[in-house]
Image 1 (cartoon, rainbow, N blue to C red):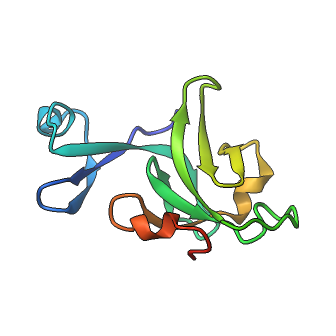
Image 2 (cartoon, rainbow, N blue to C red; image 1 turned 60 degrees about the vertical axis):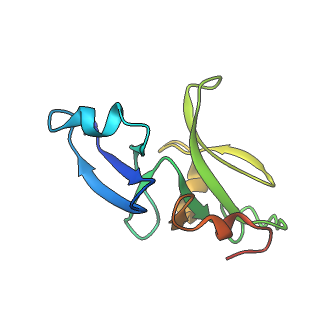
Length: 124
């Protein structure tokens, strides 16, 4: 069974709090409009860094497909229609799961709260 992990972005202080446990002070994070809570998706990038919702993934060849795009950075989010974690960006959406080999090329380069500039076209 996969461990449930969370982190939270404090909008007021502009700091990331890692390792939030469901049993410890969860109301401080989950019932607080000043906090954006992100769940660990259960995967790591090619360098071993954990991937969370809101992380920005970079893939220069978008999974080794050889396909180039004007924007190689994608945001991790939950897609309820597919019931799956996905990476969404300018060149489309791809599922982020252990069964998809394209994820082996992903590198976490930031997140939407601390590095919004990475979502601009041609940012790397």
